[in-house]
Amino acid sequence: MTASSVFGTSSRLLHRLRAVPVDVTDLLDVATDVLPRLETSRLRLALVRRPGAGTALRVEEDERTQQIPLVELADDMSRAGVPPTPAGIATALRAWVARRPVTDDAAARAGIAVVDWSDAAETAVGWTVVVVRDDLALRWAPSPAARTVELHRTRSAATGRAHDVSLDMRVEGPLALWSHRTVPVLATSALVAPELMLHRIGTAGLSTPDMHLVVTPHRPLVCASPGVARRLAGQTSEASVTLPWRHVVDLPWL
Image 1 (tube, rainbow, N blue to C red):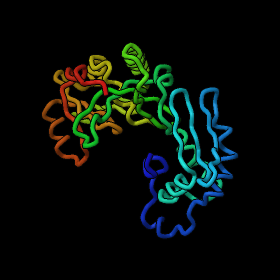
Image 2 (cartoon, helix red, strand yellow; image 1 turned 45 degrees about the vertical axis):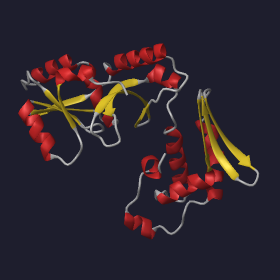
Image 3 (cartoon, one colour; image 1 turned 90 degrees about the vertical axis):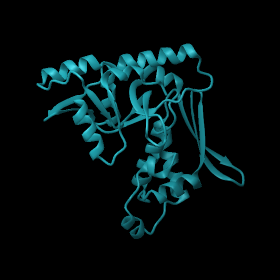
Image 4 (cartoon, rainbow, N blue to C red; image 1 turned 90 degrees about the horizontal axis):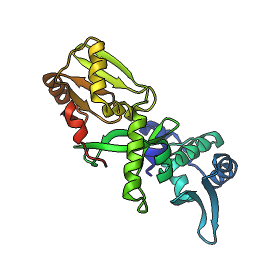
């Protein structure tokens, strides 16, 4: 996990103004108080004191285990501009724990099918399973122990849950935009039922028999005629993928 993706990055001005980094001792004190309240029957959080190597935070949940030295975590928080106060450190610590890897069991119990980037260059998209924690949607990477039958079962259940995600849809001129109020990537869960999307768009007064999709994961999903979709994709600097609605079923699982 990078500092920017976990804690958010402050502006350069704030970096220059903030003179006090997050102190490891303060982080240890906050962690000692906060971590026990974050534990569950499956999630174990421990402060591991290593002779000569300092203390590390160890996270164990089902088959997933990760560990990070507190000095490294404090440095990450400092670079991200986390306020070096008990409240600021506690908020950042809870955010770090919330972004822990998704377990196979969590994906099976609560996963939702969405469309996300399939490559770091953001040139292609595919289906994946996410688990929502607070306002975060975290992608599931199956563990090496996950069997093929379990993969199919988890993806099938996630597809079923996608049908039940509550989305906002609005028509703006020649465009229909789908969005989720708190977790942007969930907008693409609508793609599990493209025929229903067409019906709802038509009911709202926009006729798009040859609907094309402009997919920009983590942004509203756009539906429009082929020409409008291509023009829209060409006018934005953000990476996106444009495809006919019938091609959604051909997208690969990531």
